[in-house]
Image 1 (cartoon, rainbow, N blue to C red):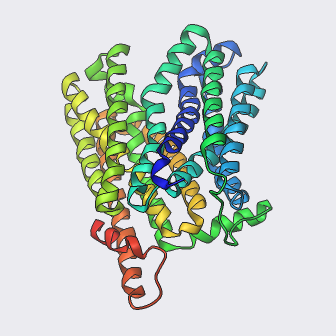
Image 2 (image 1 turned 120 degrees about the vertical axis):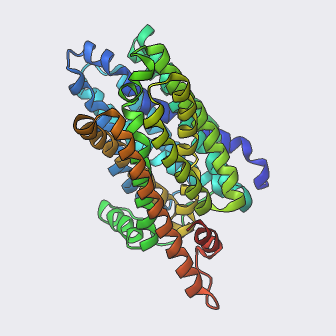
Length: 418
């Protein structure tokens, strides 16, 4: 099958990412229902989100290294099957301890599926379309934020939180069938020696890529950028309370605007990276993100302008995702799945960091000032991105006239991004 005929497979991978993303993000909206059923406080029930994120961050890279040599279809099928088992177990769990245990299984599946889906999509299209393929897969994640999580929360409120989990599992089952049917058997794993059959080898396989300066710079960019992105999103009700007056409908409109514009920004970022390179697109998106966060601090009392700024904020935030994954993937194609898994783990750490930083900042300096802090953090991400570009430029110059560096193809684009 020619690569250009595999667009349906890429969209099927996006469906799988949508399913696991919805199952992840919807949990936050279902906490009140879970707390009520098991007679827990909101804080206690909220640990289900913490457990999920922590498991994804830690287990995802380890499991990815352990399965590196597997054919890609087997990895994807096993990961989404594990997610389905965990989600069904969550829906059927008779007590909260089993809910947490089931979510650990679902989180491991998610942590493996998402980066491997991006790698598989990039491998099945011509080189000039890889950015768009990655963006298509990532769009499943952004649609989960924009549509899946709010819809799942509404269904949970009407039919019970277990119904939402069963529905998420059913959507994932469709993705499982599609992947098992459409992903080519010939799409193999890595032929290098980076795979491992035990946990110690997996840890070594993870530490190896981290020894590369560019990998550290790129992961730092992801960590700092998405900490800035998720500070206002995590505390969106507090940040926009002056504009919404505490009205849930107005707040949902702000969140919907953010989500829809995020989907558009993600797809646009994927197209732009194929034309201009990842470094340029990430730099441009971070500049717009920084300006939109600063503007948000100024206009947060007016609903109309809050919606306008939320649209710009959402588009620029998610325009970072696909180009950043493209940059990470290009560092060492043989370790693509591991590198993208590390990038995904750092993203989860950014979500956790945003909650902590935002909570402290709101208490100390107030909701308006926390947006200025987020803008400063975003500017810091731009500096980290420039650092990654300079490393590429130096390595590209050092490799001229010698053997081709694995990232020589992107050295010039990263340099231009700096």
